[in-house]
Image 1 (cartoon, rainbow over the protein chains, first blue to last red):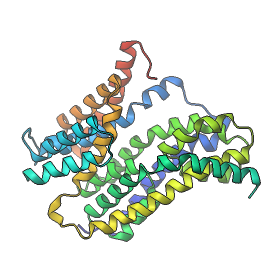
Image 2: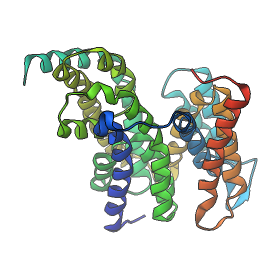
Image 3: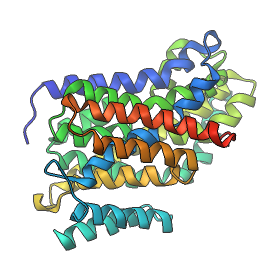
Image 4: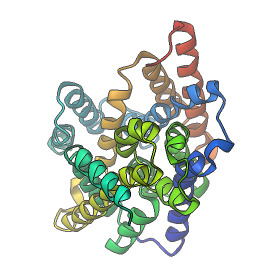
Length: 103
Length: 233
């Protein structure tokens, strides 16, 4: 796929929504604080967001729910490897191995 | 460079060095994935330097490849970065007495690893110059490793055929991040609700379903924590 100059605009926007949260309280210092309940709720944001991105990628093929796809089997292999081993490479080897084996 | 800054820099760097090896596979995978969605080496390294956030990069790459609307990618990256607001609030006191310019640089360089490694001493040490050195040692080292090994990944991808579906490595990388989180019950609830709704609502226009799914996932995790009456550690 080819991308035009607008890709650089997107990078800058993504950079802003990364640096601003990171710098927020480090730059503001003692001048600001976050309500405790909001802090607690925000801890669930990464898990909810990661699952919301990953799930359609592995459960949906061509717009339809599909429970027998190579992607789903590959994801299951990656989850198993991540649960059973601390080796950072193993989920990739298992997942890509299953994907290539079935595709 | 003051002697106490240099002492802090040295202590922070050597303490973090063994842990930093864990960054290498992530940087390689991110490089491979950026090349996998069709970025040129310049575009890939541009993203790597400007965004400098593995999770946000890996999370948005499938959306970029699918031609999703810009606002969705920006919101997704922001949500994946929300944890940094908490980290930033937690470590902020460690920057008392540090000038504003150095605070912006430190904020830009804040990573999960540097936060976890530096938090305790940042809060307890008295000398602001020592603290800044202690934080910047691991942070600058992480930045360098991230750029070098992402570049290796981008260049290695050129010798791998297209039919190998390298973009699926982003999905696996996100799974590897998700699995240890989901060991905690309320986190698992947040993930199941977020993932389930994202699939169920995939027909919503402008991919709004993803955002609805994330918001409901956060609410479900929070509700599960309350219902169990126990706080996360």
